Image 1 (cartoon, one colour):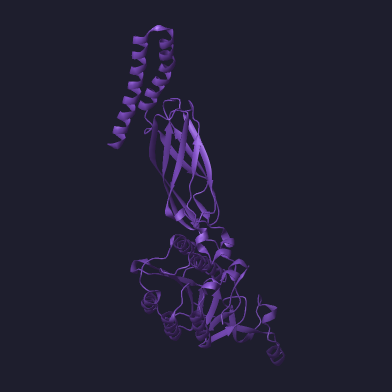
Image 2 (cartoon, one colour):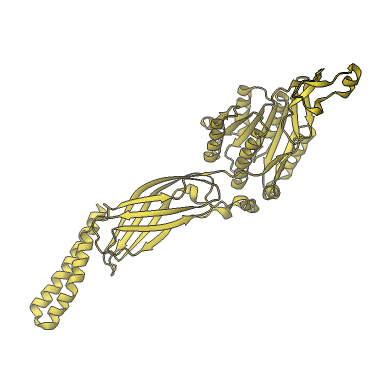
Length: 425
């Protein structure tokens, strides 16, 4: 209704101008009056034609150079406008409509330098381009988006504005053009410097560069072709006067469960949370490379936001975890510890549990102590800016360490250095 009234008003304005000039020429007569009328008539006819020229039937499309990128990377965007009738247009402006998820920047590992000032990375994006189409049937506009944050982003609409050369008539149209852009989380270089190995005779803690050992010696037997030279038991060989090799008992696989805290807190540090997502994905990849089964439990502050990915070494399972970590964000209002207690009861015992969180309080400490009684080993990875860690949290960290619970505090200092050391104690 508002658009129709505006169109009618502009139409009456142009018609009245033509009528006034024609009346002036008719009543005044003479060369000057008719010269003025004939000189302004083409302009007024253009105004009338532009007023009646529809732009809502333009075909507007958007093309992205990449649909899936890494967080922090950029994409090139090409907007194409096609129109059937090449009516002359002096100028045209295009403005993108971005979703809220794009109103922040991701500079890769460098963003963690601002971990104590996360609001500096919140920056509303605005893309506005002007072109001069003239008689062109096809109009091309390109621009680039840089430092895309992690997540699934929607590009929904393009706003087109145009007008005549004098600014008497202006037109605006919003075209619904949907594109999806997915930015997967970065992987941080992670090095695990100590492991826990579980053998048939019990649990053994050892410092090594792998998550699991291949096997453990259980006896001796006669040498067979294909046995390694390092497997020869020289004492038994000398005693029995024949080459004897060690016989190995296959180690039981070590089960590892990663638990990611996806609950929302009023004091949530968004950069610390991004680091927790990236470290979770990095740990999954690092553990998989050791041929060790790893599961992921993603705990949100809502019953519907809890996801469990069981142990599998296939590519489908890997892609499911990466896809989940791409789209996940802090949700809900239920405490992480309450959700965690329920989920641990359902999953049962495990060998190694990694708890990855950005929040730590007294209730969290008590929950970790309960989990430690059920599990064989618990490692807490606490990610936060050093300036955000309070004295109470430092006391909790010390108490957990005294009780033999592994504690790893990762701050901006660790995140900007390569690699990140994850130490199992």
